[in-house]
Amino acid sequence: MTDPRVENSEGRACATCRFWRLQAIRDESDWGQCRRMPPILPELADDKLVVAGIWPSTKSEDWCGEWESAMSSDANNSQP
Image (tube, rainbow, N blue to C red; front, side, top):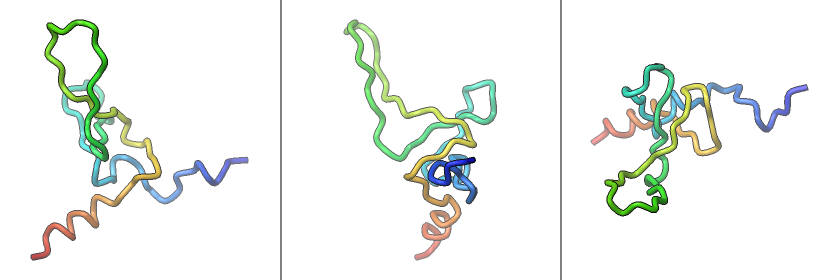
């Protein structure tokens, strides 16, 4: 039996979340980055490397409890 606490039955997947951005650099078209929180900096021992922030990479059908509709975000941004 499926645990209802972990089932995503309402279409609340990363692909429909206002914080998710499709990642164009991957060969697969269903990967993106979650921009819900600030990026993290990886821990590196070599100080000669240039470090950039990293956002979590997720598949379009993944989901979490922070989901917000991308559609309602677009509607809110279009109002004066």
